Amino acid sequence: MKYLLIFLLVLVIFIISITLGAHNDQVVTFNYLLAQGEYRVSTLLATLFAAGFLIGWAICGLFWLRLRVALANSQRKLKRLQQKLGQAEEAAAQPAVPAVKE
Image (cartoon, rainbow, N blue to C red; front, side):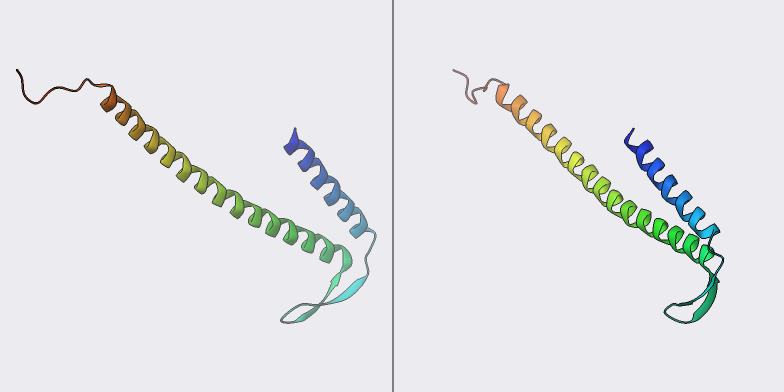
């Protein structure tokens, strides 16, 4: 449900940007870092929206991947510790055998 709402929100924003862009056929000068170009407002709006969307997903994906790796490491450590604890409990439960028989 949460993902559906996020998808619908992104879809609405995208449709609004397309609608606004379609009504703006003006040519504007866009100065970017290395050069300058003249673009239609609709093309510039759609391109910058798509670039921002992709960069945002890439950043979120990197954070998600980092958390998944940390979770996998923690689960592996927890499993190892549980195995050690089980071995220690088994060793403690075994009766002590005297070294010298009488």
